[in-house]
Amino acid sequence: MCPYIYGGYANPSEVLLSLVENDDYLLGCSVMRSMVKAYDPDGSNQLNPLAWPYQAGPSDLKGLPPHVISVNELDPLRDEGLAFYRNLLAAGVPASARTVHGTPHGGDMGFFQVAPEVTADTVASIAAFVRERAAETDR
Image (cartoon, rainbow, N blue to C red):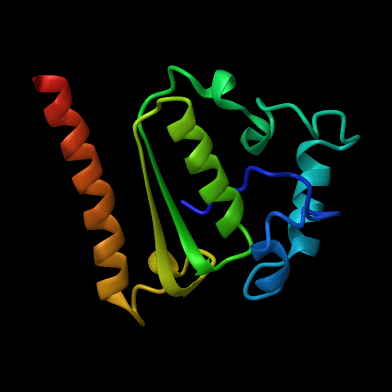
């Protein structure tokens, strides 16, 4: 959920448009840059896929367990999560992706009192993915 996996928030890639169009809509690149400094102080792991999975190619991802990627439409992290989903598929990893429309960063889980049906849908979607994978394993 809301994958924070890119690390390049100081100079966002033009490919990751959500970092620009949703910047400071509940979450901003300035905050994420600060978290990067705490996680990778000297930036020596900026391209390391073990530190920043967005940097991983299909060969790095082969053999990973199934993934559910859930992103929010109005989240700066949206596009890096969807790019990671596409890389998982390219690596042959069973994966599902969903975009929760009309919600900011974590809005489908963080605003239960306001939109409980949105939270319920997210939980149901993830549970269905888990049940489907379990059924495949039992076969």
